[in-house]
Image (tube, rainbow, N blue to C red; front, side, top):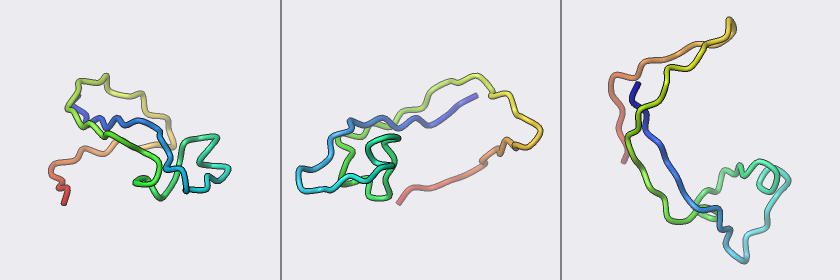
Length: 65
């Protein structure tokens, strides 16, 4: 299946204070403060195995502003 893949370099700005989630999981709601050089590409991925408590959603259309 086709997938959109976003890659970027983890490079927090010097004055940005990282929290526990930022350091451990590289998760933040202020992505522009920590990620640099984003690159988006369309890639082929294997269809994931879905567990009984999960769903797979087929997206027909989407947009990025």
